[in-house]
Image 1 (spheres, rainbow, N blue to C red):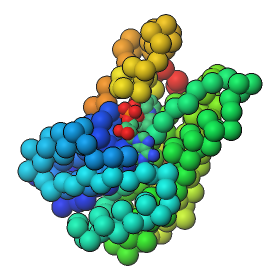
Image 2: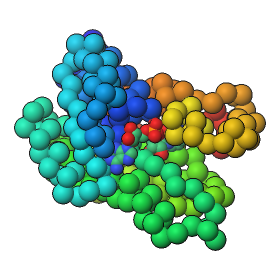
Image 3: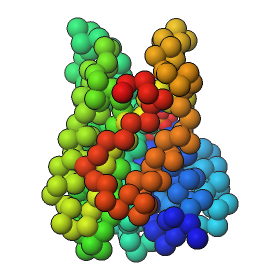
Amino acid sequence: MGLLDGKVALITGAARGIGKAIALKFASEGADIAFTDLALNETTDNTLKEIEAFGVKARAYASNAADYEQTHEVVKEIMAEFGHIDVLVNNAGITKDGLMMRMNEQQWDAVLTVNLKSAFNFIHACTPVMAKQRGGSIINMSSVVGVSGNAGQCNYSASKAGLIGLAKSIAKEMGPRGIRANCIAPGFIITDMTNALPENVREEWAKQIPLRRGGTPEDVANVALFLASDLSSYVSGQVIHCCGAMNC
Ligand code: NAD
């Protein structure tokens, strides 16, 4: 018996990194998986194969999470294929860092659109489905910097703070329909996103972590599993930090 037997999970931006780890974790607990990423390619093919190795049904969809029409279209396709959506993980995200004085409008708009509007798009498309089912779990991938702020990341921090406000509001609005909404706030997790940072920046982050290591995508996936499953059936409107006590 898996914790997610019989459930369908939709995970955005799951070709690699944290999203992929969540997809694999959920599949290992019996969930069927629909995941999106910007394009279908060798990376998505490999992820799909790894998910299917758990014996669950899985499909990958090319979809820009920032695009309202595409998002609604892909949710329709997923419903036609899977019949229900029980868990939505709004994971797709990008960074375009820079100090406020040097940040341009394009950097601001891109990050807010991909990180925050994308979650609105998917929640907007999925909540009618979940309301009809009278149940669902929504997980927004926030960040510790959405709570604490971070110099050089005003756009990213604002988008991640927005995801918290969004989840808390949905928890209140949709709770009576059996829909829960929560956030995970990861700290410094070792993925392609953080490997792109200069070494001195990564070293500085590492020094601030009391547990003395960067997190792994699996560390975050374990929290996602809790929030997706009935183990958290009375947990909604919360932010769970997964940061090695970095920002507590
Ligand atoms: P990553 O860059 O390794 O993976 C992100 C995935 O999202 C990629 O596969 C990318 O193609 C996809 N993506 C990007 N834009 C998209 C779009 N518009 N539509 C669909 N897919 C899109 O990043 P990651 O480190 O795995 O991060 C995953 C999430 O966790 C992000 O929201 C990130 O902000 C958040 N997060 C990461 C860390 C960290 O330390 N890595 C910390 C806190 C929060």
